[in-house]
Length: 143
Image: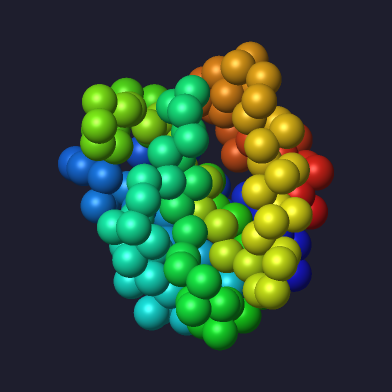
């Protein structure tokens, strides 16, 4: 099962708040068969510990350490929010990348995402992407 596929990407999303944004990122992982539904609750637990906002309009919500048993397959979801959502502490997120990994898979996935997102032009391309394939192309290293 690929870590990222077209069905894991939601373009031009409009969400009311951070909670709705995280739930959307988590539910994609649930609906595509990567995680058990309880994993979404663990994403909120993780967020309560410390914000998953990474800077440059990117947030990477994921479950707590004890949520790994809820992961069926390593996967990521991408939620594009062109108008942004308040992510707390004065931060605005325009891209949410939900991550689920078993063992230490999430670290490898995170490092690949970090490489892509370290370049502001790539972040802008994800924010402005009109097709899921554009995002797949930018993040193809995760598969």
